[in-house]
Structures are given as structure tokens and as C-alpha cells.
Amino acid sequence: MDHRNFVKLLGCCIMPCCAAMTKAERGKAIDENKLLIVDYHDAYLPFLDKINALDGRKAYATRTIYFLNPQGTLKPIAIELALLPGGPSSQTRRVVTLPVDATSNWIWQLAKARVSSNDAGIHQPLAMNSRLYGTIYTVCASAYEAMHPI
Image (cartoon, rainbow, N blue to C red):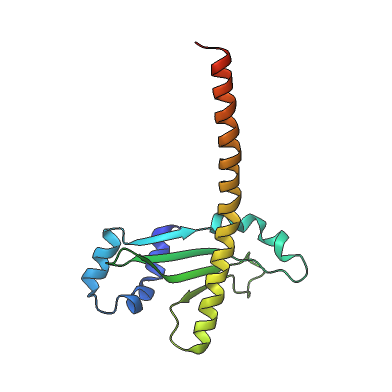
């Protein structure tokens, strides 16, 4: 599913966080790029069958839509949790929106925890590699340049 279809699918989810906005203003928010998507779906989907085959493990691929409010902060308004298709009757996707009661609040908190887990799983290796190899490359390039001036 591409990002445009995902935004269309979650168009109803924009309503709770933007209740004071008219339909035209919500459309303008989409046009002005005030809706941002953090997509870990494609990064995690190939590994879900191996992770979920382990006892006591359950992982989801996530997509999250954030709304950039006038104060300049991002507010999550919808989270999609996806699994690999397991059969014709299995539910492989679930969209979680802002909570309206105690039960949906717990589901919302669990969905946000899944997003945080995916974020850490992507961010930490990238940050570590960029620090490690970026530093080593800089030191080696500086040493080489000092030994062999051009």
C-alpha cells in the first residue's frame, strides 16, 4: 500500500485530532505536508515470519501517521500494525487510532510501544554504524592524507 492510499484509508482518523478544523482545512493540512508518515513496514515485513516463529515472540511491521500541530510538535494520530498473511481468513492489518475509552487507550499504548520498538530496532544499528564507521573512516582518511600529502 503506498503512502497516498494509507492517508486516504486513515482520512477518518484525522477527524479526532483536528475536530476544530473544517474539511477544507484538513485537506489543506495534507497539501501542506502537515501529515507525516513514519514507515517501518517494508523494513520489518521480510523478518516477521522468522521472529514470530520463536516461542513467546510477536512482532509487527508498523506505519504511523503524525500531525504537525500549530505549536510545532508532532502528534501521532494513527498506527497501522501489520503481520504477514497467514491465510485467507486471518487479519493481517489493524489500524489503531486515538483512544476514546479505557480499552482503546490500552490498545493505543501497546501500539505506540510497538512503534517505539521498531524505531529502536532501525535507529540504533544505523546510529551505531554511522558513529563507528564514520569515525574510523575520518581517522583513517586523515592519517592517510597526513602521511601522503597530495
